[in-house]
Image (cartoon, rainbow, N blue to C red; front, side, top):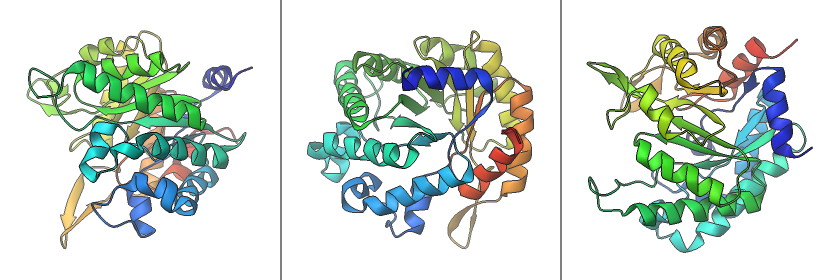
Length: 296
């Protein structure tokens, strides 16, 4: 049985637990604000391993690679586009090493950092090539599945999912980020849940992560909408630790692990099959999720 088959089987057996934020954990270990975290995949691998290990020990079934801004287009801002293959392969290999047989590895593919034509200056074929290159490197490094996450533009998500398939991904997870609008929860590009998930028709698992000023109550509503429009596919939700506030010049997320863990019951009651965390969450939040949803 392949790792992908094992992942599908596990999803049928029980709710799975994702991990939490990566960037803030790396910053706590010394990564300077504004520095490219992917660089640490080759320059400080022990610290990246440490983050993965903390989430594994907290009960995560899925470890996400430290490759969120890993396309050549995004890495060009740091002058690292020429190292894209090595940084992504290393990121996947580190997560794979820590996961062993205890967890699955999601190769993380985030937005490329711009807008597609005609709203922006990036031709779709250029973005597609960048996504395909990142996807191939993540699979070469040992990722079990690919995660296309934090998408606001359904067209960009569709390109990234297709690129992941072209690179050979047997399992693709796709998540969008939503915010409040006068007509309900929408992506930044104005797409509702149904429109977003139609764009992700070729993904195996669909859902949402992050979210601008969304509370856990909002995420409970969003979870129900996602399940209703997922067409029977497993749904993943990975909220922030509530809406951030600024205190003494610092961004702070006030939702504590206990409250975050309690929200898991509402998500799973709506039919969600994977629960994890995004901005503001750490190992303690994931441990609370694991305690709430894993069989005792």
